[in-house]
Image (cartoon, rainbow, N blue to C red; front, side, top):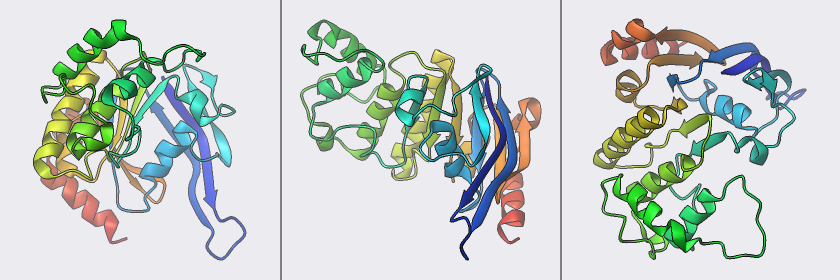
Length: 254
C-alpha cells in the first residue's frame, strides 16, 4: 500500500513567485488499484508523481510503502520498487543502444553490475516472447537501435522495460501525450493489459478524459494541489466522459 502523509511542497519559497502547491496533502492507494489522475495545468499532477518517485524533494510530510518510509531514499533507490514511463518516448530508453541492450539493462535493474557481459544471450528467447506479446512485430528487431523505432514502438518497449522486473508500482506520466491518436490507443490497450496481467498498482496522469474514464478503477481530479474529485469502484465505473468534462471545466475557470 502507498501512503502520502501530510505532504507539503512549496516552490520558490520566500520570493514573490512563491507557490505553495501541496499543504498537508494525504493520499492512500491500496495494492492492486489502478488510479487515473486528471487536472488542469498547474494542478499538481506531475509534481505528485515526482514527489512519489523522489525526483523532487518533500518540504514536509512522508511517503510510505507498506508502512515503511521512503522519504530518505534517492530516486534511483525508489526505482527498485517503482517503474515509470514518461511522456517523451525518448526518455527511459537509450537511443544509441540496440533494443536487445536496452532490454538487458532493464532486466538487470536492482542487480549488482560487474565487469561481465551486459547482455545475457540465454535471455534472448525470453525478450523475443515479451516483445511478441506487444503485437507490434518487434520480436525480430532486437538488433535495431532504439532511436530508430517510431515513437509508439519506443513507448511500448519502455512500458515493457518498466515492468520487466518485479515491482510494486507503475507510474505513467502522460505516457500517450506525445503520440498520434491511433498509436495512443494501441499503447493504452497495452497498458491495461500489462497492469491487469501483472497485478500492478498503477497511477496514470493523463489529459485525455476518456482514457481516465475508461481505464482504471479509481479516478482523481486535482486542483491547486487538492483532490476535488475521488471516485472508485462502481461510482467510478458509472462516470461518463461528458460528466467528467463538466467537472473539469468548472474547476478550470476558478
